[in-house]
Length: 362
Length: 111
Ligand code: SF4
Ligand code: SF4
Image 1 (cartoon, rainbow over the protein chains, first blue to last red):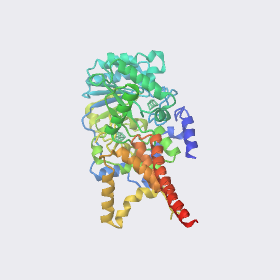
Image 2 (tube, rainbow over the protein chains, first blue to last red):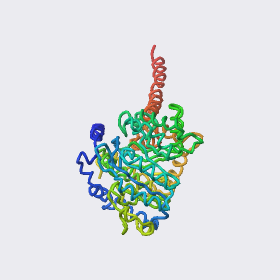
Image 3 (tube, each protein chain N blue to C red):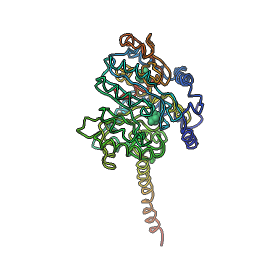
């Protein structure tokens, strides 16, 4: 039975929840699930109560280090686990006007890292212009989260490795597994072969080589209802397999826990794994990880310029609890005084060694 | 009251066995934890051994637990199935080797 449900999910996953008019496309619905009986009955503790126990409530930001900008939800892929609910059918794209407002902030912020994400950020028609402008701002670490297959999706993207190199972009790419079966199941048929080819193209221009300054890191998300294993061990296994089988080099592997929101939440519910998964997250709760959750050093900006504590809160439409809520009014000091908005999805950031866009945190 | 002998939710309550015998329970879990740490064998190898044994002793809780553990460690389904076959081969071999006893007895009793 589960098999047939999973097949249905796979079929449905060719479109975003939004395009399918699935009720979970509604962020209110997702929050209802996250605040549902499992927690309201007291079976599992609310995240707020859990962190209060270790004296960590309210969660407050530390120094701002990372500005993460989501330039749009459009993507060439429709991965089953996507927390953005991205896909070719999503039309939300950052305009040049909003990009200008972001650039203004990038030029003046104390953050040392700029992190462009999506969807597939490269699909935004103003992406290259934005990268060129932003790279002049003297940011130390300039990350673009590229899904790899985009490089091969169309001729106009084939030169992306060269383009990234020219602007000294730090490429962070998702690669769920080093075997074909697992990758394609999570991300779609053919994704594995294309990802391998794209990694080889990046290697060719110098990315990921052991002594190269052109940083190429990989992101690993578990392809199912389980948590990632030890990041170091995974990195070792990935390095060995990718080198032996495809002569591919990369620098670091970030193991990222799937948060129970959006399409991953949909999958958890449909496959009857939601309860078990939440138990796993709560059981693996690690107060040390709370200290360094991503929202303590990051601000996330949406395609339309709203500000969030993190990309996950953005997808749940939980805007920052601050007077400043939009990039056009951006102010470091005011924002730094806010309390971080939390819910039960936050358990995904505090399980085991913790999880953030830069991998483990504890 | 559950109306079947096995309830998947009971696996989460495994730790509760310490409530009725704290000392022995804690000693067991300490031992258990230690066994599965990285050692002369990697934690990955031990996870596969655990999976094979789980099948041989036919413990549904352990099968669930070590399938999930394997997935977490990036163990492939081919590796998992080979481990199950290794367990099954030993188990069937252990049955079949008793065939020698049967043969011996047969010969002894026959004229
Ligand atoms: S996970 Fe990344 S590559 Fe996959 S659909 Fe979402 S944004 Fe696109
Ligand atoms: S989900 Fe966002 S707000 Fe919650 S802990 Fe993680 S980074 Fe912080």
